[in-house]
Length: 359
Image (cartoon, rainbow, N blue to C red; front, side):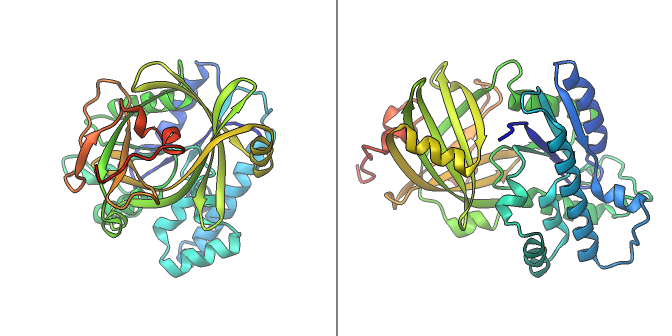
């Protein structure tokens, strides 16, 4: 399959998404990328004469169909070997923000898509926090943006929740100026794209078994993960299937250690057929399953892994933009100890030897 990164800029009204898309195009083209942009479908449809008085469900369905159409047109036009990136001003999962539970179930049925299909078709999502959350800054309405400040804050919060679970989700805060906000966004996107290299900078903590119901009351989403470690012609690699209720995305990952906290990471999306072929043709070292709770809290994306063989403890992982960045743990998470540097707690080690949680 084509491995062209597809990025979503999401968030509440007046977050700077549309302006950021245009700037990202020129900035990334300077790094040799062909940048394909998909602007906000809602604006496109409204400018095309869609009747605002129609039910919300009909509007969101039109947006989704238009988004799918635009994504297919661009994806089909890109050469598989092209150095390219797709940047979307909002994505399919944004329909969750505006629909009640029953209508969200209905639209998924009509589109024949799951949460995984809507959310994880995108390789990365960046939430640009709405300026409405900062009372010191002026919030403006217009012909297209009609929400009041209070309504914008609700949309912003629902958007933050909707995208939890995406494998690469980052929060871009409101700043004193748009230029400052954009610099934070651009740094995060360069890191995601691997400019100059794709580095995984991660800290890992052994924590007391969390309250799963409480986690899911926050901006948090649960995913099922099964990852298998294999040896091929070029050395060791990992295959992961991730999703829920039988709906999966498939990823091949190679990691090359730079330090205990920093690794060069190469990820490739796979089709199910490619995944099955690699599983069949390579030597399997071991497989491990877990439930991952992806939590956006205080502007940080935490990943909490719960394993079937532990009843008292779990993992918390935090990806950092800098090796020296301070890690702040939410006060409702009780840390037992940091295990970043303890090889016994690497996932591959758990395939063959599980540390006793009672010791």
